[in-house]
Image (cartoon, rainbow, N blue to C red; front, side, top):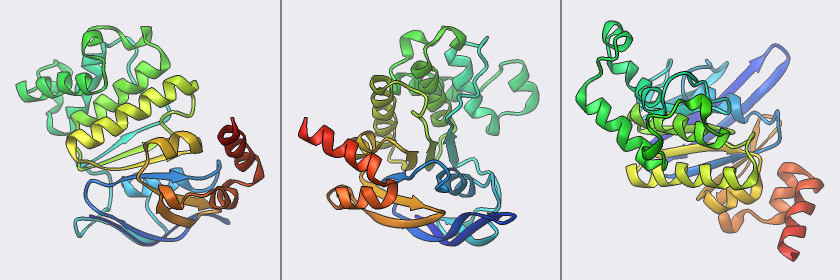
Amino acid sequence: MIEVSNLSKSYGDIQAVDDVSFTIPDGEFVVVLGESGAGKSTLLRCLNGLTKPTEGSVSINGESVMGPRDDVAMVFQQHYLIEEMSAYNNALTGALGRTNLFDSLTGRYEKDDKYEALRSLRTVGLLDEAGQAVGQMSGGQQQRVGIARALVQQPNLLLADEPVASLDPASAERVMGYIRRAADERGLSTLASLHQVNIAREFGERFLGMKDGEVIFDGYRDDLTVDVIDEIYGSIETDAIRSEAEA
């Protein structure tokens, strides 16, 4: 169980997150929707302990999040991979939290970690490309390596911050499909922030709509109506949804 209670984060006069509260049961797949600057990334960074809230708290299974945790993994918009290394070796870096410095520098990972890296690459459809340098991969493939790296961490909570923002629509759907597959296979609680409503509706179960740092919507797919989308995004996004529905 993830519990967020009266969470706020301000940067000077800017209120990035404003008194947000919600709970996420074990294994639920949640998509956070909102425009750029709505507070989505700050919320996720508070959940994984990278950002300290100004007020309020985040707890996982009753334990307060005070900093980065091994049981919380993050998939970033930017891949942060080592391009000269293979997909397999990049995925293996997800085990750094349970590997001492000398062994990590010399590539002496535990056998179980090596197996987990291969298993995770298989989950994201890249087992055959395990030996390929990530610098030679497409953006979508690189993001899938980033997902594999997060899975090697063996988290209970998977966070994805705009994981498909820089991808074309086909690649975006493919990457989100692999994130959903990984969450389902491993029973992970998952929060993914997105701005593409159509992709969100295809893969999400529950949706949190953010605007100006506040959660203004919390519901499921059938509740995510055009009027709700209009409230979260405004008429431009709503018109795009209507046009697609009519097509």
